[in-house]
Length: 80
Image (cartoon, rainbow, N blue to C red; front, side, top):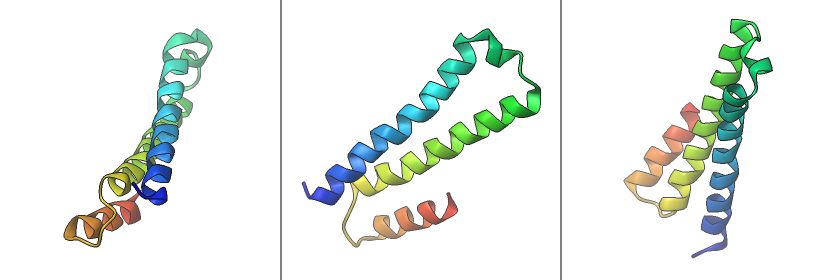
C-alpha cells in the first residue's frame, strides 16, 4: 500500500465519523431536537456534504491508478 492510499483511508474514517457524530447528537440530545427546522435541515445537509467528501476519499483509497475508474473518482470529487 502506498502512503497516499493509507492517507486516504485514514481521512475516510475521519470524514465518516463526523456525520455519525452529528446525527447521534441530533438524536440523543433533546436540545437539538427543539431547534428550528431550518437549522436541523442545515445540520443534516452539512452531515451529508461531509459524508460525500469521505466517499470521495474512499473511492481514491480503493483505486489510485490511472484507469477509467480513476476518472469517475475525479468527476465524483468535482461534483462534491
